Length: 118
Image 1 (cartoon, helix red, strand yellow):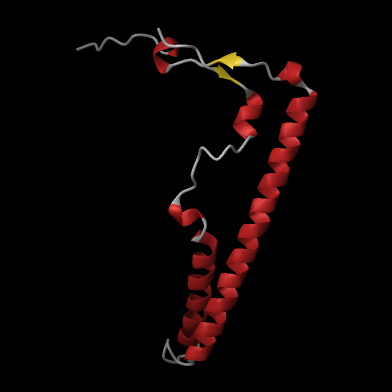
Image 2: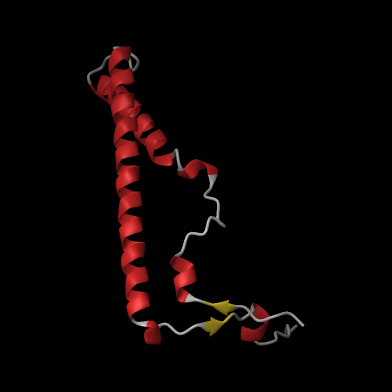
């Protein structure tokens, strides 16, 4: 018989390195910022009735600015998430009675048996 695993609320907020983030997580915001910066210049050129790739130096500059903004906002989001997790972890440590450790349940234990009606 398998052993029953106990879910600890603090374990949910701890990063033990057992979960690897997806590949695009690290580059998603800088990539979107770069594409948006490049697209803004293309849209402005189109609005002024110029060729969309005219003034390639503006495309490069705005792509760099957009990438930097994406990196900045990605760092700010990570700081916010770290602070939020620290506050939640601290609250759980101060109020252990409100967050009891529970036994892990499987779907087969929770769901009722299903019989198809034909």
